[in-house]
Amino acid sequence: MKNQLHISGILLLLVFLAACGSGKEESVASSDGPIQAQILTVPEELTTEQISTLQVKVTQGDQLVDEANKVTFAWGRKGEDPTNNKSSQKQGNGLYSIQHTFDEAGTYVVVAKVEANGQKKEVKEEVEVEKPKE
Image (cartoon, one colour):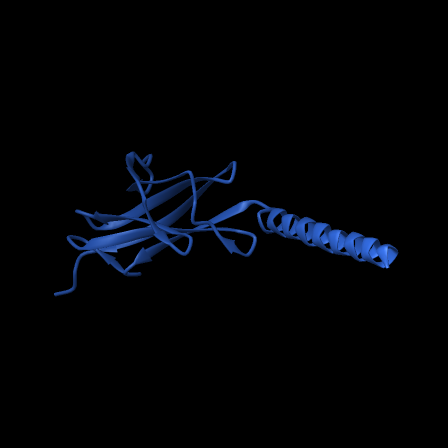
């Protein structure tokens, strides 16, 4: 009887240790790989004198990154260095954003710089800003 109790205890301990080990492996696997970033605009068609939202969606593997250390945006006219810098607000679901009003129509370069999970990523996107249609 004591022998069966010891064997049952050892089996229970092994099951517990296996469960703990597999959970840790899953969390490491889900954070493997480089972070990815994609710039989005709301609305998609930007016009002058309108408040626009510039967003960056941050992922790592198939996971959304909601706890980035730092996400900033910079922008400037195409052909010029993006010099306007602004820290973003965390929106959730891997999204970080700022609001901005473009004063002049033209092509702009938007740069998002992301620091998350010990990695850095910089992405650029050209956006076209038009005068409002009358």
